[in-house]
Image (cartoon, rainbow, N blue to C red; front, side):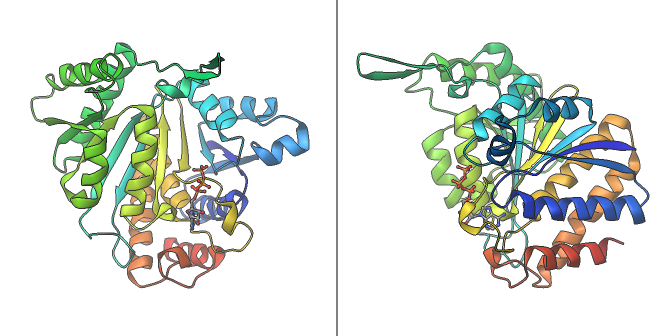
Length: 338
Ligand code: ATP
């Protein structure tokens, strides 16, 4: 039995959370992998109810769980997710971008993953004002850079696709911070003889993600660049509705869609829950590896194959050219899972 903390979030969060809960309940009831799901409040809606964006009870329940699923939160995202990533030392943000047939992907052979350092960079929130100027501190440490580089190399080997790691930075301008990041990654890559290691400036990477997205395998980069490039990569494979992610630490992990709360489409039942459904798949793979549980891997595969089948058949939500509502699409997945 796995205890799963589930943050319902804001905007489209509650709608896609309902899909996630239905899918976990189906797995629990029909596929013989047991979950206890604890729905939790965090974000703008929690602030309205309790005066806190991350209520103590939510944080305590997350810490006691086996893994956390998090739907997007609204304006208070930094108080929730940036806090959780740092407080739980979830140092690796893994953001795969894979094209599925019959979507708005630029090509059908894109299969890359962005490995974003999750605890440093401008996201440490050290900003201040002096004499009508605003200053932000960017922290890049050798320890965190080597840790994320190692993780990226391990993922490249595990995936076995191109066994290539591209280190993305802007060391020609940010010579100290990105200079360190680039050197640290290159040094770590030397320990992985099977890996092709290359480096690219972030502007060139942004262009190449559109010009030749199929050429990328694993991209390792700093926090802010990773955030921006992964939204771009999501669009390249058909939109944010298709993009899951994982925040991974040594002992705990949190899984969430790449996208935000998308208030423009909230409450309309048109949100694509695939981003959250594929986040469940990533969670099962992580639980499977941590607990040496083959059943988790089996069901993770089943989820991915089902999403692939359903979308290939043209059963899709509006964002990727279909007509299904959030719950209709979820039901199509559920019917084929059992
Ligand atoms: P943030 O700044 O928190 O990343 P944002 O409002 O800038 O959030 P998102 O909420 O990430 O941006 O989404 C951008 C747009 O992409 C939304 O306005 C919405 O139209 C579309 N979108 C995002 N997620 C989904 C989804 N799951 N299904 C359908 N469309 C989506």
